[in-house]
Image (tube, helix red, strand yellow):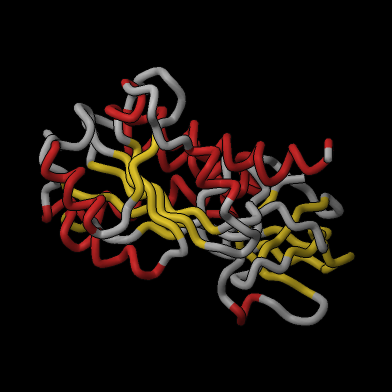
Length: 254
């Protein structure tokens, strides 16, 4: 069943859900749904309901709630990806796949080795596109919530945000070049369900020595993501996949 996020409380009653906006076009014209078809509607608090379509028009889709869904598909720990601004459309890929893999939020930041410069005049349009990407990825992967995307920050501002988390780490390629490295697995072993983890990933070229020094001074721990050097758009996906395996798959074998 297709999932849609219905975030305005006034669209919900105890028995019905009314869908408006772009989702109407998707249901009516793209999916070509008919009265009687079932969809999943998810509210702003993550509550989901299986609904039967009763009426479709060009302006709205009216549905009737059949049953409430109790399934929890969110990662057991809250993960924020702080991503150094990469080139091209790599950030969009990170948003899409990171959402599918369970990230709770994303923070883009300007690093020393970031080549791209976001045009402030176009930033609003970019933000709208980013939000559409994570919404659609959340629907496709049947997430209970849509990840948030914060405004771009500087590294200094990012360091100040670290106090909001139970643990802060950054992917540092020098850790992959030594036998005395800090492993990502050792960080996860100390995390418990409900904790918040901030993962910082540099742009192409990684973090500079001065940035790494500043991160360490603010209790961000350098780790390696395996012995190989990963591309910036791969690192977040590696981390989220590892977290899912550690917290969601291993428990079935213990």
